Length: 269
Image (tube, rainbow, N blue to C red; front, side):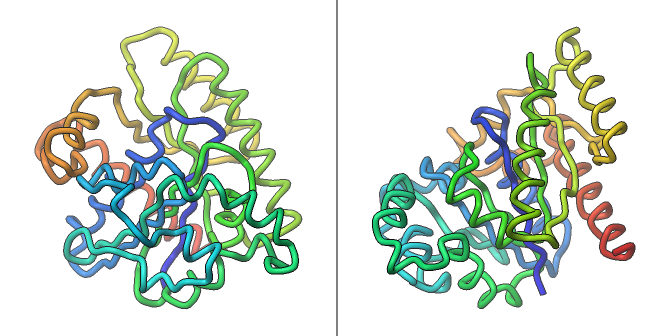
């Protein structure tokens, strides 16, 4: 039975989609039997772009699954051997409105993703859900469907305040809708360790996590143009186009850490 990870942040521009797509591809490369599914719920559709696909070209997306009752099997696309994607596009911008104006139809508004995901869950070992950068209806559906949450953040000014806000929102939602949800940890993205600001913000994040019982992954993803360039020019995540590069190698190290940490938590609880 596949483990469902929600990748959640309360703002854009923190490398959330880069995390999802590179981590998923790294697992497929390094774990020869692993089957992985990416579910994009962000209206920008950047997960498809990371693999050279155009979001506007999809007739059926996660919107049809959540709003129209379509099956995931009917909308998913294959990206490479053992890696599939449920794409998203701008249609997802209308999901909140559709649900709020059709409450007789959507009697369980936070279960629009959980049920279709459960039907295909056994087909995968890992499922990663890329969430929109806001704690609304869509993010709520993701948190109901997920087993675990990972929170990526960029160590800019007010980074810790942002972490606190998203964790408070997740914990509040967990208490009301999904008590089994686990917060697996936080991960530093787009880090320039040469700058005093980033070093200080990482230290503050580490202190906050330690004092409040949250896990902060030791591996950080450095700021580098390689990640964006790989998507723009190669049409694939950097772990697929430049896997031997020492900067890109951080994703393979992070992959190992994420999976090992997850296995430990499974054994404990």
